[in-house]
Image (cartoon, rainbow, N blue to C red; front, side, top):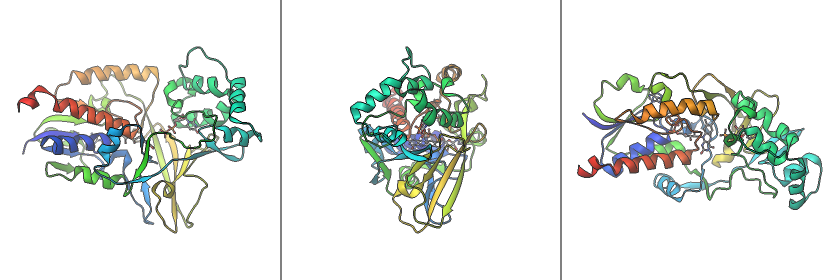
Length: 370
Ligand code: FAD
Ligand code: UDP
């Protein structure tokens, strides 16, 4: 049996490509993953207590892209969900992103929106260029708030000082002068009603798609005939680290089930302080599941383990560019996804990137002729 495509990795990138190539273009697709399940890092499952949890940390879907939302809606119904986060700072749980209530709560003030704007302006340190993750925050709210909310969290999460990380990292989190305490403001914010894994199962449920789990691509690449490869694993691994290793940040997850229906006061609590973990998530808030017990997960960052985060900083981008060039000149292999293109992408950005690659493949002259 000859496959048109061998898709490496069954995360968002791999599943979208497999689905589109098979259902959209009648291609024969083999999708493999080294893990024993589909879904990549967005995989969810019911734990021993029967609570739906995310095996690789909390995944909250949000996007401004109608196209991405409508595409995924073919495979799942949704539960509307607006995410909220609190940070444990100076003995209080305060809203993150920093907003009016964060400042009033932290300092025992009664400022209005206009006054808090002036409060930030009086403390902000002007920076000519916003190059680093420190610049972004200090130039908006000043050093004290930066130290309370960002410095230690970032040092734990990345093993680097914010001054060593691209501005784009902390720029993911806005600062607000109103009382909006939602973590995201995207047009579409929702969780797949029956979970991510059910959605992936429906994407891959097509006679043109064969799934091979617990299988490293390197074991089968020479055994199973295929015309082209879609590769969503780490790009440096594909090339056997020819130019050196691209740094990735990893996490260890510690799950605990509590014999109570609700454990903490918010879906996610961030710990920008001395604890070894960065945040604790309580899944039932995300999924809306009703259950007498509840499961939480702690995230402990580290440099060893599965690659979860590309590390955005100039020297890594420069190293990636060398791999990118090599990838571009490697015929018959298409690199896509968070690890395949070394980009700190959210799920919706990966879906958009995968749909764009599909459009490119489907528009290629050899396809049109076929
Ligand atoms: P992955 O999901 O990593 O899939 C790649 C797959 O390739 C993996 O399953 C891997 O096992 C497989 N693979 C690698 N090498 C091989 C090989 N040689 N052979 C076979 N298989 C291989 N995004 C959001 O939008 N919202 C969130 O709230 C959010 N929270 C997150 C929280 C955490 C802790 C993490 C780590 C990420 C989060 N993300 C979130 C990002 C999201 O996980 C990614 O954008 C998305 O899952 C990336 O999909 P992908 O297909 O590119 O990669
Ligand atoms: N961050 C922080 N304190 C917080 C929240 C975020 O310092 O309370 C910084 C930290 O560097 C983090 C980055 O902002 O890695 C992006 O946060 P986000 O919540 O988007 O991270 P993710 O969900 O991708 O892990």
